[in-house]
Image (cartoon, rainbow, N blue to C red; front, side, top):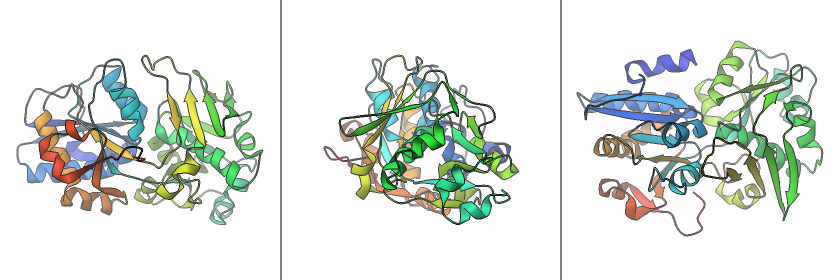
Length: 350
């Protein structure tokens, strides 16, 4: 975490409040710490006198900063576009009227280069590695971070892919308290995450509130493996197991496969919505919250993000982009951003 924060330099200051139109505040998914730190620095260099302030959380916590805690940010990004739709657009008190899908990713199983199990992971037999006694396995808390509930989806999809009816149980049973359960209904598997969730001591599971916290543990050798986004593993030079496309949540051609699993979270802090996340290709979204202090400044920053310089920065950070960006409510999009975006088609997966 400290290493990631250092990369932001002067651009990464607290975004608790601001009053100057020369300040643009961002709240971002934690998997974007490195590319958005570089974006912030580049934007400041090309816009003298503008200060970019940014902070990062797991995607659910990102949105809760606005919806539940009432904080004001000019630009918000989420690693799951559906979170914006569910928690900001469709809530009882909407805090966003559109979002633009600007990037994608895929899930991988990252492992510690100095792990004594590194050769086993490198062999590609990741299921055997993951279930080997003594392996320390990291997971982002699915109640707060999209990486966490996507990791659970990957395990369920792997169970189908490898025709192993016990895979999900082999990895999860006995490791969570209360337990995470899996049921099937109408051709879809539903993973139920309880309101209270802890890792059971001595089982090898390490639960953290944000996926970026697991990176530091992998780098320090305190974890053997953790589910992460491929971009994050590459940014931190971590070796990883590349998963089959039909389970890694990174391919549009496998969208129907991904939709066979959903994660339901029984969390009372979701005051106005029922959090059920259906498997889908990973789609990062950006929006301007309705509470933004400087919507015009936010629009200029997003134009920079979606333009050639922003795309180049994302590419240099191994963050795959979506060009042009896909917008769910195109009519609500600021006019200045429309040349950089196209409307999402009816029924189209973000």
